[in-house]
Image 1 (cartoon, rainbow, N blue to C red):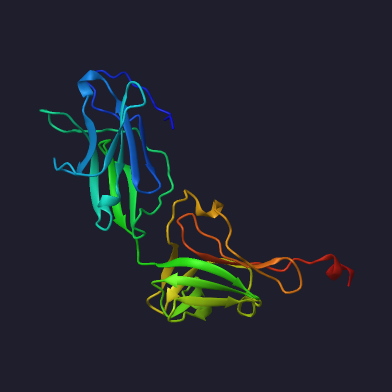
Image 2: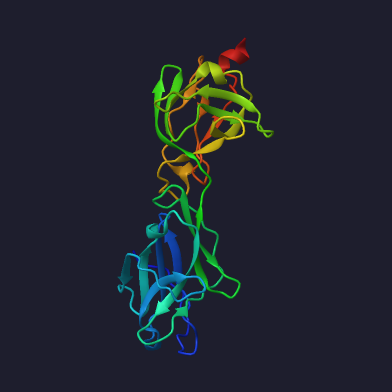
Length: 266
């Protein structure tokens, strides 16, 4: 894979500036700076405001002539919130913070730990920084199986109920979750609902939490393979689908039945 790199003058008086920076698959930082002689060394992370260089698995990239690059594994930071600056470390020299131009918007994905999210930010003074945050508690979706007129969901970390709430957090519809973590959404429980697309939650009143993809390795989960659906009983039209949000949270989408030619004829 070749990088679309931005060139700069490389004058020794300039601080190291990222010409490429991205988070891959939610847990791999890929960063590159111009490899001028005065800036030879290695790219690493240190805790913000310190010179504490972290010992993280790093692959130094040398296949782009004129650039010093690295792929740094961030899963070693999972489970703890923190701020980490990208630095250039050179023997016998002070650490140099790597600067960056304004960063383009990017979809944030979970790390290998589904409760941790890493993101790239630009500090007010222009430093490139990794921000690690912990996500709100959520259940995980392990599997969906289509039954006759129903969908069986297998969850991990679920509460006693699976539910859809309205804007005032009142239950629109709910289904019990068994001791084995399964919940069955039957066609009859959604057939009379108004068309909607709303998040799925699990738990009970005052302690609801969302349902998240177990492993979100897609930039946009909405573009992934669709989950099984439930159709209207009298036609090949969808009644219920389970789409993902861009952040990898499960939703319920209920469709209105579209008139058919037989309806119009009658």
